[in-house]
Length: 173
Image (cartoon, rainbow, N blue to C red; front, side, top):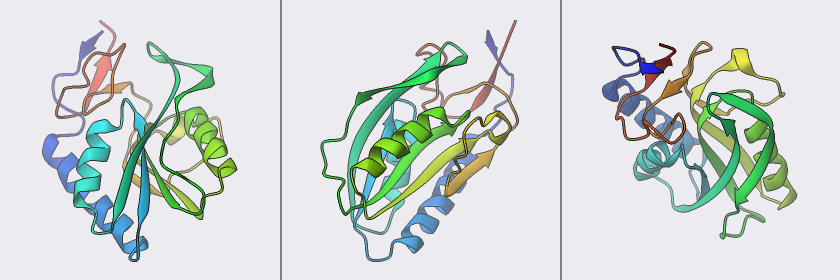
């Protein structure tokens, strides 16, 4: 596997879009507070940048689910880390790095809804609607991309490439 030469999404494009998403989320929740659940590990960079630009009170917590092995989604989703913040009666924003097949997001939404939030929305930096196998959509989308395996800005391939400040396509050699 090797990185594409030029980034698919540059640092500058990501920064601009994160700012726009923060304005949209803040505008939809003017009263706050908002419970932001960052999906570990991939969304950490995105969630951090997004939360710092929100203009409403925020509680930040984490949730972790796993469905990928290498470049393939295994089909089943395992919840590894649950948030410690109370969810009941809270406005919840799930922050994902990428919405691909939708299996992970659907499993997270099912679990969160069972906790009784006042409201629940999903914000994803990258959306690959062509790969969707569940009926789930993000309320806030940074970028729609075609069916490519991407890394960087928190997204990985076997725990590699998360540190890259831009998003690249990972190509087979």
